[in-house]
Length: 137
Image (cartoon, rainbow, N blue to C red; front, side):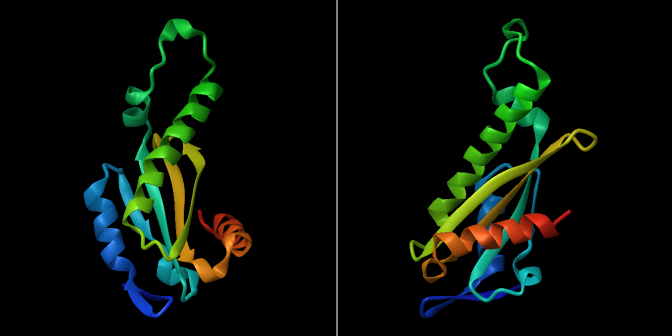
């Protein structure tokens, strides 16, 4: 459990973790908020089942699409699914999500979701995301 400050409010990352796990069919979700050592940012690592995503793609074997192109499509679909989390995040926060890794052995796609106080700004949020992506896994 970790608390962050957003404007004049204090938010419990566990509350949003619970909402995220209840509203979506992700393989699993990991709350990285406390490990970030930031007092204004929610951070979640989200794992998608690649087979489940693949079943949702409208791709036929006859389409002659390379495995690399299919993985790109899976990553885009994973991003789209995570973007729905923004609907539960307070409007006083900026959101960022990015699918960054396909793990063939575990058959999963990893996505990072970050929400920060709007006072942080878009540029700083981008810097935070880059730092987090370098430090995980």
